[in-house]
Length: 308
Image (cartoon, rainbow, N blue to C red; front, side, top):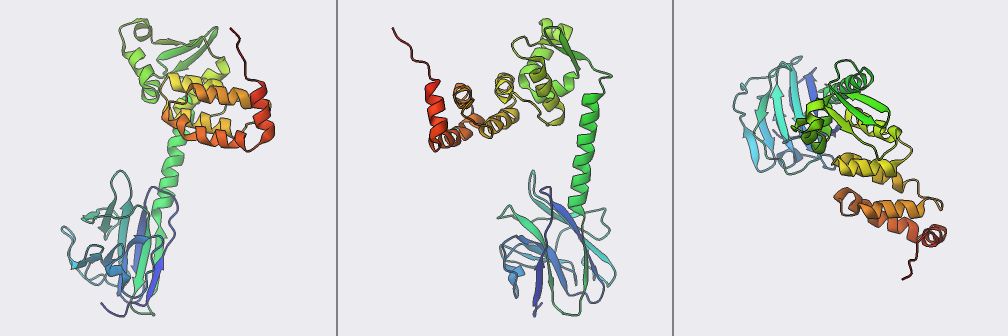
């Protein structure tokens, strides 16, 4: 396999991996695979960078000295012009590259992955070969994500078949125990217990505004956070061990620091500074206030001094 002079790295949108379909319209001297996004795929770089399948006999080339190796379970046959070669790369939970001739039954390539950021790659041996490519993974991933989001939104909006209640004063929010239990280990323990919360399937929160509680509950369903009081929501997120919401609230607070709220934001974040997500933004808050004399002055003026 010499004379590989034309190579291309392709852009795959989304982080959920991709499926690439290669069709040899004329000629079959094609290598299709994956390479790092910053790779220089000149000459025979495919022998050292990434992992690639040779369309001529469906053998494998790649990192770690892989050279013209067969893939167990993949028939060694000639890919004729017009036939399709599908490659699927999934980065999580464990990176995996697999191959298919029909786009349905995929055979895994036993590759070792030394990098996290791989993109589709095609190398051509003859300049008169044209290739049709279709990035299927991004559209499938986006559609799947959009479908899940739509379903979560509908579950949140449609309160039929709820089986638990969150109360705040005279306000009640009908919810689903399965959703709350997944969102918060604290809620799961309460709902599973033999105490009143578990028996009656009721969670009571009396020290927050109903609007803040509703925003936290909506986040549990949809991962969307819409709240004008991120500081109050941070307290609830911390109490109920919702780490992703803690991070979101802390980040939102950083983005709205003014002379009017600098002291409150600093005080609130300091209260939860031992939480790993708050600890990440604490240095940034000190930087924001420290570099702005007006914010520093406003924060210091609101510090209470106690006398014996």
